[in-house]
Length: 274
Ligand SMILES: Nc1ncnc2c1ncn2[C@@H]1O[C@H](COP(=O)(O)OP(=O)(O)OP(=O)(O)O)[C@@H](O)[C@H]1O
Ligand SMILES: [Mg+2]
Image 1 (cartoon, rainbow, N blue to C red):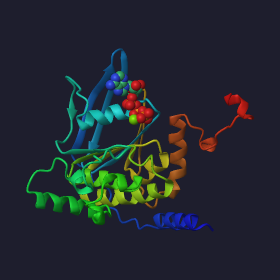
Image 2: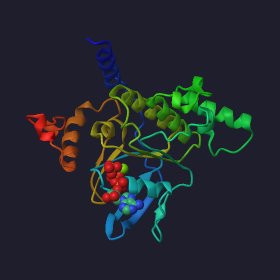
Image 3: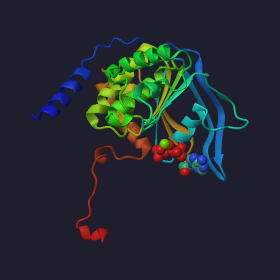
Image 4: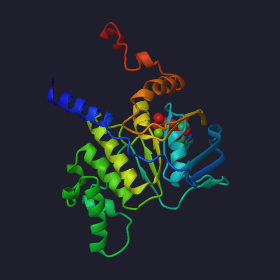
C-alpha cells in the first residue's frame, strides 16, 4: 500500500478505536440564544424567524447549501454584522476562525497570535507561545506567516482564537481548503482543544462526515430556517454505526444523492467547452 494511504488507514483505524472516554455533555446554560431572528438584505430575507440556542460547552455543526445564510448567521454571532433591534444573546468573549487563516504577513507568527492582547510584551509573548505550543507550533514563534503551510496557518488561526479563551468559538469552514489527511489531523486537534478549553462551538461546514465526527448536534439551514436537527449521543470515535444512517438523512435534506455524491459527470468531448 502507498505510504500515504497506509498512514491514512492507520489514522482512521486509530480514530475508530479511540476510547469512548468523553463525558456525556451536561445541559449547560445557553451561551447563544436567538429568538425569532431575521436578517434581510434589501428585499431578500436571508434568515427568517430563526430560534437557536447553543449550550455552554456544546459543539454544534451547521450544514446548508451555498447561500443558505450560514456565514450571515455566524457573522451575527461574532458581532461582525449589526442586527439592529434584534435579540441576540452571545457571550462577550468570542473568537472566529475563517476558511483562510487571515494572518497579517508583516507580523511574525507569535505577534499574529498576540494581536489585540494587552500587557507587557514578555507576558503577551509567553501567552502566545503557550497557545502555539498547544497547536504544535511552539517552534514557529518567530516565523513569517508566508513561510507556513496551509494547515500550519490554520493552526495559528486556531491558536489566535484560543489565546483569548473564548466562551464561544465560531468556525466558518475552517478546514475546507486543506487536504484530506491534514483535515483529519485538524479534527483531532480541534477536539483536543475543545476538550481542554470547553468553549461552545458553532462550526459551519459543507462536509457531512466532518459534522458527524465532531459535533454534539448538527443543524441544517435552508432558506434561512433550521430544517433539520440531529443530536449525536455516541462518543466521538465510536460513531461508525450511526454515521451511515445519519449521513443518508443529512444528504437527503441537503438535496444530495448519497450514492452519487462524489461522482462528477464529464462531457463526452472537450468540444463541449469550446
Ligand atoms: N452584505 C450583504 N449584502 C447583500 N447580500 C448579502 C450580504 N451578505 C450576504 N448576502 C447574501 O445572503 C445570502 C447568504 O449568504 P451567506 O454568505 O450567509 O451564505 P452561506 O450559507 O454562508 O454560503 P456558502 O456556503 O457559499 O458560504 C447570499 O445570497 C448572499 O449573497
Ligand atoms: Mg459561507
